[in-house]
Image (cartoon, rainbow, N blue to C red; front, side, top):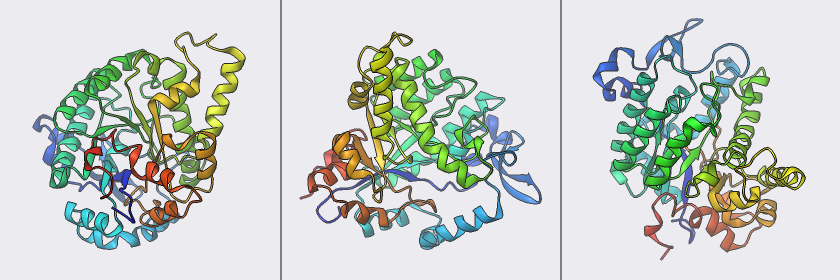
Length: 377
């Protein structure tokens, strides 16, 4: 706990050791598991199916010298944890040092892997299972404090459904899903309905999280640099995903489905709700017969959006939308994240103590099954 607040960081990341993909994958696929390979231009990096896991050419690339220099500088604040291989004990020590009770952990390399279409979806499913089994073991060191979000192979909905059920039974805290279209399917595509039904049945949240330089369609593709593409991709993909889930009836058909948008900031939220409401007022559900309620009603019943502590728009979001719909994230330990300063930044926001308490803990803790820790003593 921190200064009288419990804290759940709803967007933290694993830093996967390269060997986990071969060590944990089904032996049938071990020869094709992700591994360090030739990325071209004399560079080595993680590859699968004969390609680097992130797009290396065209727009929104992740290979410029300047980007890597900036990333290396950003990682300096995590040097001790990196030297220790980001082991659970080191992570927990960082959490204790800064008063974080719980982290929700997503993949890093795994998120990039999910940015590929995959010629063999069975291989992708095996890669997801390998990560999920490793992450479960990692988080078992402190299962109440480290909640792992399972990777789902949405490229193959039947396999995603199976993995959702398997990992829920193994103690997953939620599911990691990218917002991008896969195999030409947006999130609202009817093929995904059985995945949403399975997730409803197990009662865990879907965590929508973009990742850089994918092969999948991305708003970042409009830009020639990784930085400019990243500026666009994360929030615009979040807005598109929210539109898919609300306007095409996913939430109407799956009213128990809970969605958490992470690593896209929160300042866009009032505008996006306004934008959807304008179109509802004009045309109602003329093109969207599954839309039975106002868009904002669906949002308020089924969504949380995670914010950074330093967002200058945060008081306006609380005023215009409400403080019941926000969670907190730092992106630990990624170099562009706000760890640890984002914690103090949120405490300094011109917000009532009750709002800060909701954002730090109360809104998200029940979704991730950690509300049993209770309020601060």
